[in-house]
Image (cartoon, rainbow, N blue to C red; front, side, top):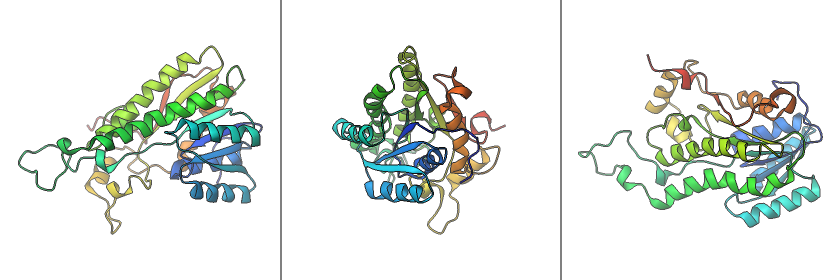
Length: 281
C-alpha cells in the first residue's frame, strides 16, 4: 500500500472497530504503515487476527481484540487489554456498522398491485430495523463512551465516525440504514461540541459507493454483471465509477492529523466521486 499523505502517527494508539471489514481492515493497514500501534476490534476475531498478522508481516504494529460494539462490557474488556498492551487510545475510528436484509425493501416504490412475494415497507421486520440502528448508532456511541476517556486533555486526539451518502439524501430500499447514518452525522456534530473544551476533535467521513461484502449482492448479479441499482449509482456519480477503498485514506489521515486539521471539528466530509454534488441534470 502506498500512503497518499506523508504523515506520521508514530507513538499514537489507534483503535478501529469493525476492523475485519473491507474498509476498516484497509484503515488498519494504513495507520500501521504510518507508524501507529493499531488495535483491531471486531466480533469476528479470526478475521481480525488474520489481518493483524498480515500487517505485522509487513512490518507494522497491529493486534486483534474480540469485541461486540453493542455490549459495553465487551468493549470495556477490550479497552483494558489495549491499555495494558499498547497504551491509552489517541484516535478512535468507529467503523462498525452495516445494514440487514430484514430492514430492506425489495422495490424502490410501493405498488399495492404488486404484493406477492415482494417485501414492501409494511413487511420490514422490527428486529431487523432495531439491529441496524443499534449497530450503526449505538455501535459508535458505546465505544466512544469507553475509549474517549483516554483522550481527555491529551494532545492530538480524535474520534472519527463513518457516515454515508445516505445521511445527505436517503437511498431507496434501505430506510433503517439511511436513518441510522443520518443520526451518525448529527451525533458527530453533537460530540464535537461536547468535547470541544477537553481537546478531543470529532469528525466523520461519508463514503460514497464502494463495493464491500455487505452491499455486493445489491450491486452485482451472481454472474458478476451489474444490477439496475449499480447502473443508477454510476449514472449519478460524475466520476462514473465506484470508489477504491484506499481513496478514503487521504481524508481519514487529514482529519486525524492535528497539524493539518487542528481547527476542523464537527464536519462530515463526503468522499463520493461527486455524487452529492450532482443534481441529475
